Length: 125
Image (cartoon, rainbow, N blue to C red; front, side):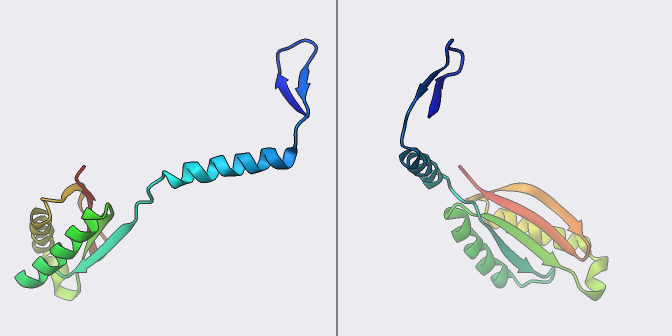
């Protein structure tokens, strides 16, 4: 039995098939999940002294990910003496963002986390 009208006096109830009710609820939930878009985050790793052509290839791959609607996390890993030249890594990230600017927008500006510099790109609407 299901209480149809909680404010009615005396309470009004309806007798129903509980299995059928549960099935309908599950079907509604499945239908609503079908309309959702799962956004995945793809990661691209580089070093601060990456060559021009290698950067272009990685930018091309990132553009493919962005066209598919995925977010891209660009990571520059610093090792040894490279840690003293964080500005070089920032320049590489900005150059990367410029190469992918046709398909992306910078979601999170470059920030340093430990020995890595991280930037997030999201697809343009």
